[in-house]
View 1: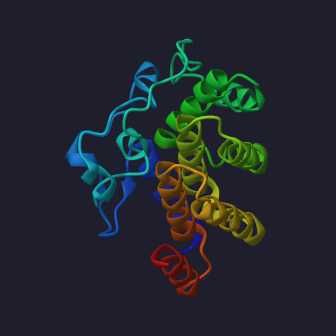
View 2: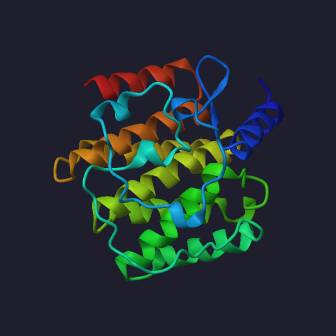
View 3: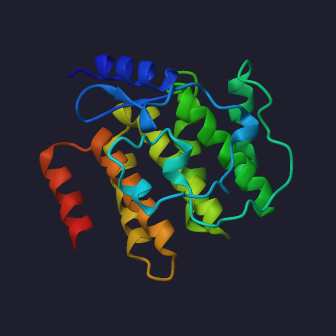
Length: 225
């Protein structure tokens, strides 16, 4: 499949609030109608009702329920950055700028906004000029996360980055991120939640940007080990 056709598929899928499933059809969690959530509904504190949520084949990387952690409490009461979807480019720029802030709550709020926008709007073309900077910011937040909430949001952002930019990502961008995510997954000082989410982000990155089936086999072997 050509890069142009793949970009069109990704754009259509994200703008519909869903991602293509392995069967070739677009799915949403539990067949719910895929409509963009209100910015005020974005919360990393949503509980997982069933451990099987992590193994749900129909779970989408664009779904908030796929990237939550049990019992995690949101550590900020500040208002969301994004008040509407009309000026999403400005909202995304502002959110990315907050990822270097010192306050954990501010970074979490920015990460939640980044994930919300990138999960429901194809940003690949509009944000081309900041694609590398945004990836580095997300990796920095994931590496130095002060809470599981921040780490999960950052890893979700990395997975969504590859859905939006991964088709045209350079070999170095993919390879360096693969090494980074593997290191997180191996780090026994991290919580099991973060290690699992690092593997999830690695799987998305490999699916979108992996060179060939050998790369996929390497990732599968790593997960199996």
